[in-house]
Image (cartoon, rainbow, N blue to C red; front, side, top):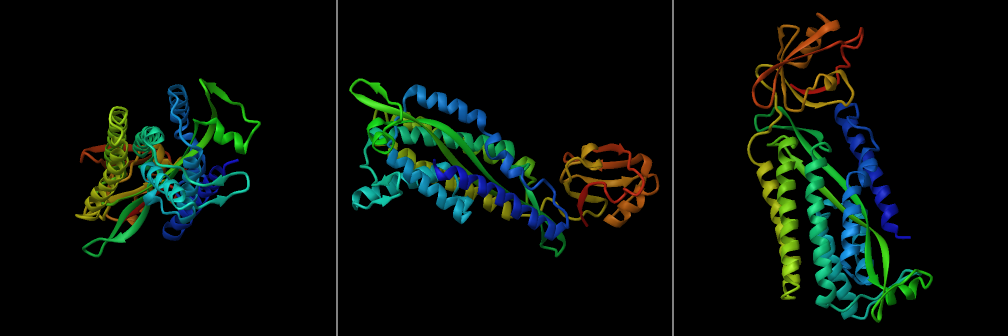
Length: 372
């Protein structure tokens, strides 16, 4: 019943559509299948969603329904504006807290038909569970960045400081985690009286499966994505653990809950700014080379992919012939296409040999995008 689910599915499809459109405009070919973002929306993080559902429901972290409504509003706005720079869950959770309090303080209401959003009073009783949930989702966010951001990097061509072609990589991802949460039964009962109740003492509670959404945008040009995003992911994961630790401290001194939220927002901004400034300074990692041809990207399933070629590697020789540009690369392949042998300089500046059969008339289908 939550529109966040359906909007997230549509947003993931559009992410893939616009990525493919951009790649075709620059390279006249799409690199990765257009529905990749849609397929990875839930698939990447389903195990974390299951673990967190069991954990949150087992511990009994109770959050008000109005905060979830506010979180839905904020999530929909994020996806509608595609401003995924603000897609970290700590931003969304904190914005939902502020929106819920703002509606309560000003006696504002929004009638959505099935539910009416009135906001809720700011109390540490529900703010502490929100902090713990936000910290756990930031932790998962870091794991997702480490796991999938490099793979999601789509190349863009720029001009280097010397006026030569160079490549940068833009990573855009959206993840959705359906998580089981506990809400006060009295609130949910007014909207769905048929929903099963869980009596604990004199109070009633209900379980609700809520779609948690967070997004990510990253740009890498000085560092190859495969080396940059594990660092970003580790920093975000550490921030998530810190938010959880401070949130647990709020069980002893409640004002720490507000400190955890504000500190989490500041910490996430600091991580984003640090890596953005680092990547925009210095030289491009993928630029034309004086000896050889540098790989921008490799098409999945292509002969180049089967040979294990990677972004940022330099092809120095083909069939024993030294090359310096793309034309020479394909001319050298035709010398002995049946057993195409490449001499490649890897990321560690070590030479390795690769070979693969290139079928007749397929010499232009090696599956490489190169810069020269």
